[in-house]
Each structure stands twice: as C-alpha cells, then as structure tokens.
Length: 131
Image (tube, rainbow, N blue to C red; front, side):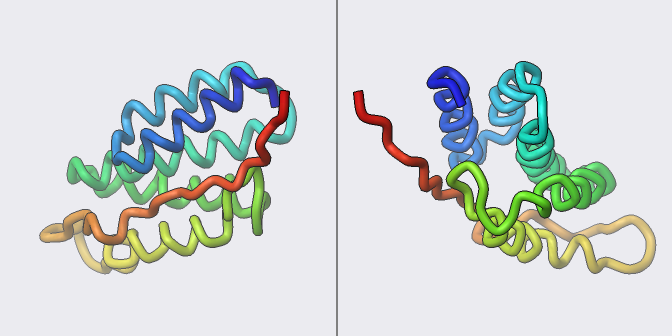
C-alpha cells in the first residue's frame, strides 16, 4: 500500500473511532475508488460498517440492517486479521452493537437506539516504516 493510501486508511479509521461515520465513509470511499484487486472488498466492508452505524444512529433501521449484513459478508473472508485490523474482533463487536436490532422480530423496529457503549472502536496494528 502506498503511503498516500495508508494515510487515507488511517484517517478513515480515526474518523470511525470518533463516530464521524459519514466522513469516514467519504474518506474510505476515496481510497476504495483508487483500488483494484482483492483488497477492494475489504475497504467496501469498512465503508458498509460506517454506513450501517450512521443509519442506525439516524433511526434508519432497514438501511442499517442491510449495510450491517453486507459489512459482514465483505469482511469475513479477511479474518482473522487484515491490514492491521483484527477483523474477527471487529465483526464480533459489530454483532454486539447490532444484537438488539438484528434479532428484532415483528414489524418495523421501534424503541431501539444505537447504544454508544457498544459502538466498536478499531485499533490498528500497522507496521511502522523506517526512512
């Protein structure tokens, strides 16, 4: 990964951790559009993670669930760890965050709110480069 791409990746993760999900989506999408190859779906999964949390916070439960499920489909093949991200742990944390919404049965969910204490945080373990 080029230094410019790594900078965008780290910036996107920092925005995610600050719960700036729409801005995170924008930054990661900028990176995603430049990529070709197998890694592209990893970034698409992260984009969907940001979007599903944005939708959940806004009360768009249908959109949140759709993006949550696709996030898992995109990221699962990259586990247990990829690009310095513990994918397995991240998906477990997302599952915990979406537990109440994803198991809701009946009509359209109501009375469910995004629990800020369950929103995943990402710790990157990227190798440091030496000049």
